[in-house]
Length: 161
Image 1 (cartoon, rainbow, N blue to C red):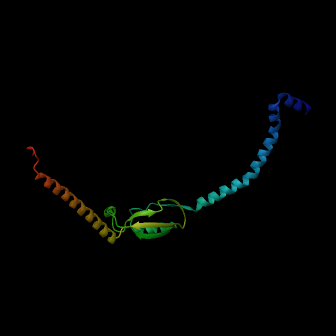
Image 2 (image 1 turned 90 degrees about the vertical axis):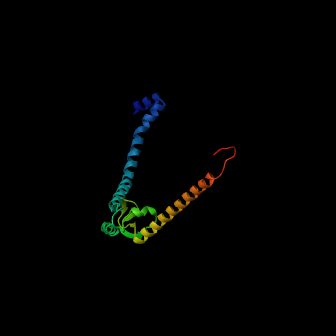
């Protein structure tokens, strides 16, 4: 022991560092041993949470009843809601799911899934929206054409046509 002390003293600061390495490794080992149960508990909780998650399938473009039954069989709570009229729904079929919330992915079993679908009323109102837009476009184009026609009858000075 006397030789080790003399050796560490002759090395100075570096010797002091070498002399505390055994104590430091012992402290680190105890810290790891004490932290292991915490990490294991966290990992167990994470695994239990992952086991409760279920993959939510994408049911967009399916008939609403078929989509509802499929998701309920998987353990989700399903609400079916008619979508608001919009011209983009004119390409969809009657009772077709066009939006789902949340989107597909992993969710806890029993989560609420909202399915928005197209009804006959939505299709009618969407068609009316499109017809109104087309009428406004035709009226605007007619006004532009009338404006150009009115300029055709104006005679320019200095012999220009």
